[in-house]
Length: 121
Image 1 (cartoon, rainbow, N blue to C red):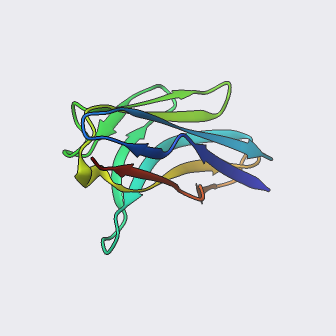
Image 2: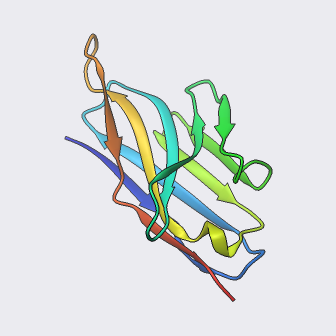
C-alpha cells in the first residue's frame, strides 16, 4: 500500500506565506515526478508545479515567481513554499506522485488527500 500524506495548509492573510509538505510512504521502489495541484471551489483541478528526481522544476504561470517546489528524495517528500499569497490562491492543494512499487513494474499515479489553503483578510 502506498500513501501520500500532506500537511501545512491553513489560513493566511494576503501577502503571507505557507509551506506545504507531502510524504510518500509504503511499499515503494522509486518515486519519479512529484507535483502539486490545486482545486478551487467550482473550478477544475489545475497543475501548480512539478519536480523531477533531479530537481528540475516547472511552474504554472500563476505560481511562477511566488511558489517554489522542492523535494528530499531520501525522505520521499515534496514541498511547496508559497509566498506573497493572494486570495485567488485559495484552494484545496493536492500532492501527486508517479511511483514504481517494484523493480521492473510500470509507474502508477498516487494522490494525497488534499490540504486546504485559505487566503483572506
